Length: 130
Image (cartoon, one colour):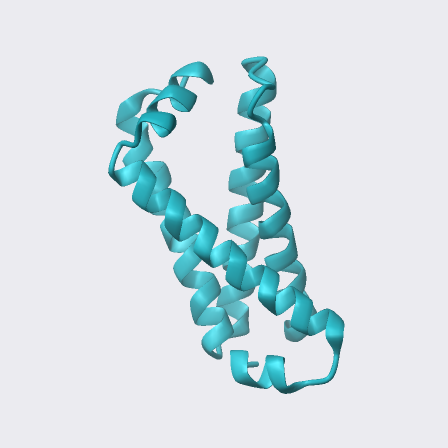
């Protein structure tokens, strides 16, 4: 189901989930740029949870692939969007676990917010795929 079709339907829940999916794409695109630019907050947060700086570009690639997959899903290939949603949910569950294991709780809201957006996107694609 394409983005235009999803937004033209009168189902407010589907419209809301489509908007959440678009927000998930935007949020992940933003953080990918920040990761690749080695933004100060990215390096500081990574160090706090024990992540080596060399791993950041690889994690950025995973988040970028997820964002692209969601976008392609909205453009008309919902199965790819579903797979991307599953991948992003798994990724951000791992990020939350990393924060909990390192006992870095002062900024755990960020991975939780990304996780919530990913769950919303996954829910969207599960509803239009099955």
